[in-house]
Length: 79
Image 1: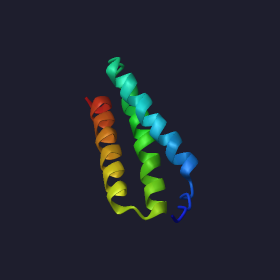
Image 2: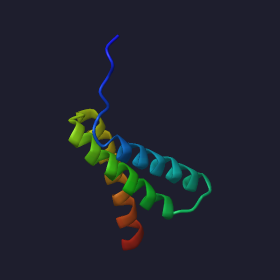
Image 3: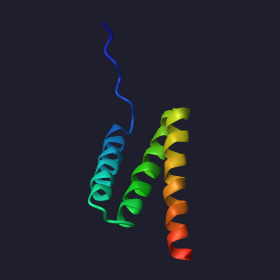
Image 4: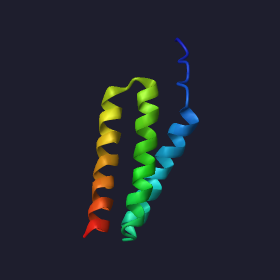
């Protein structure tokens, strides 16, 4: 069986994944808007890593989620 070569930036991908999980915990505790910031960092970071990996579906997913949280934060502070 052929051994797979690890993708570059794997360490950062795991860091941003843990950031998203932390955001989910903070959201479960009801700490709005703090979880929006955490999700924004996690999804934004994974969008960059996905772009470096040339994974278009993950770029779309994480960019879309980061955009949703950014719009929510803008809406919070404008109203």
